[in-house]
Image (cartoon, rainbow over all chains, first blue to last red; front, side):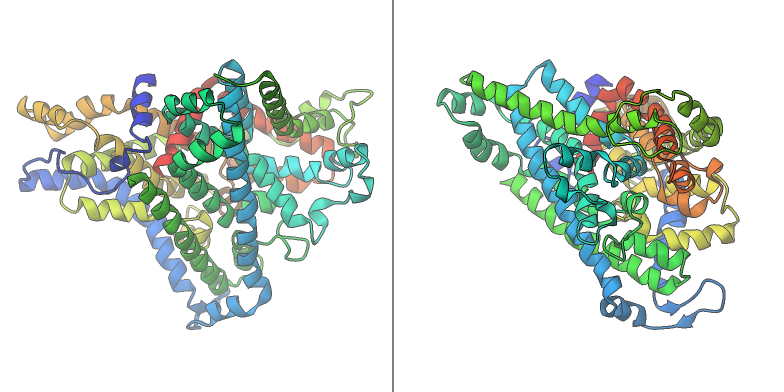
Length: 323
Length: 274
């Protein structure tokens, strides 16, 4: 395991973009294909393909199909054309979920990635040994617990008598205390804070792994020249970590747009609709309000949205790898 | 290395603060869990009379033995099957290069960014039709399907980097396709298979949405799903809720401490590849 994990890691270095591309290269062997081997080869793919088709592709097609109907799940379906989609863009509460998803991107993605860059570069500069290992492990803890647990823990910390208000009171900011998750203005940033807590460690460790792959000579010569942390950060770390930053953004942005667990547990979309995101709204529309068509239209939009946001990020980070 | 002592200290103090902010929430719920049941304690206040019994009570009311069994059952049902079938598919695509490999690969990769929320509604109706709704299979079977894009992609990335000579030599010795898969390539792929197995176990254990929608009975759910239900019942009893949350976290945290190197590596590679 350790040996092969090393080769694995090295195959994903910033320069080796070949392994990432889905196009198989010429040097790989392919068997002479008599018809018996062909059929046999397909037998190997079939189980995976069947599971994927039945539990992912068919539901996907059903989602698209449902989205063109009015249906309460019981009585016959009624053709609705594009009415469900039009409705999402016309009803502020529905469109608001998509707006909220983008606001969450700031907290779930941009802040953890930016902060992660800073933390990783500091670890690299002043804590390379045992201490750095401890930082890595501790920051990673929130990443392994269920998001539901993160939501419950923070639901309590952000409550009126929770730790956050207690700290604010202790440092003389008593007048700012409130029930954060029940506040129309502050609930969304409060949910965002949970996301930062969960994702910071992931981003830090990923970026740190990237930094250790950068040629140490670059850092050494910079340090011999007496470069400050900031200079080192802007002229070496950020430019050479573009690929890792791209990966971090891809993962965290997907997390933000498809958020469900944390929001469901901490606010369930409230107060009002101030923290409602597509995932939550789909759940409510389908399973509380029995509006299957509308829920499906929102689901289809969510899937398109994720693709639209992820593809450019992937393109950008890969292009820069090639340079 | 010209890093001043001042900078060294400032940097380390900053890191200690960040670690403190990460750990403080855990400590806070731990202390809260020791307060008398049904009281509303301050966020950070050691109780006069620590109620260690809260953990026992939470263990009983949350039905922990059953939950552990149920979650383990789901993990044990999902992970080995998903590992075997995805490795076979990746072998066919990456090594055998069966006709249509590129199309197959594209089809799998297409599912990589799919949010579970996008298909949860039809999944519910589909499972009612098949008749597995509200059983553990309701979580197990879709999870296997949902893991296919990532696992096939991941294993193929390994196979595609294997030297051609290995397969050629085996073929020369008269190995059948199955021999080539089971006796030659599977042992060589144990590294990535292990990482993938760890990843899928963590994901399964923590899976919430599928458990919430597809299984009504919390004792048939995953750990995360059961925690959701526990919160619903004991939302007002903060100490008990905190005690229950800690109990549910303990198995994950123990596993993390034991396998932290593998878990971190697996999760990172997973995202780099995905």
